[in-house]
Structure formats: structure tokens, C-alpha cells
Length: 85
Image (cartoon, rainbow, N blue to C red; front, top):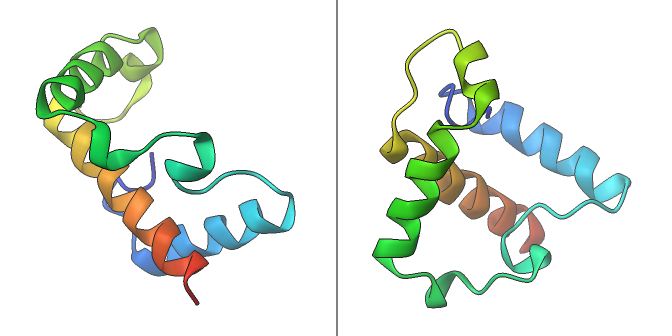
């Protein structure tokens, strides 16, 4: 959600650090997903399904499928960079 809201990398990395402290996953691979095996069609489906979730109506702006996809990819990338430190 922070990535979709265009929050700073620093703010997202701070949350990732907390996730690490409490043993929560912060990358797709830590959730058992191989990003290289996710097709563009699957990404699109994920984005389209996600924007239909009831909670999305609570966002203070309109959320598009592409925003979901970009946000997940950004958060995953930041999680990977944090893990590689």
C-alpha cells in the first residue's frame, strides 16, 4: 500500500526492517513465489482482481490495476535490496 501511495523508499524500507524483526516476509520469494515465473497475463489478472477488493474503495484515490502491479514490483524490489545488504 505504501508503494501505491508513492511513499518514499526510506519509509518503505523502515517497514521492511520491522518485518524482518518480527519474521514476516518482505519479498515475493519469501512468500514462496518465483517472480520470474509470473507471466504478464498473471500480473494483469492480479491487478484487475485486486482493484475489485472491497477495501480498495477506502483508498483516498482511484486505484488502477497498473498501480497495483507497479506497487508490488516496487515493494518487492525494495525488499530484495534490503535483504542483500
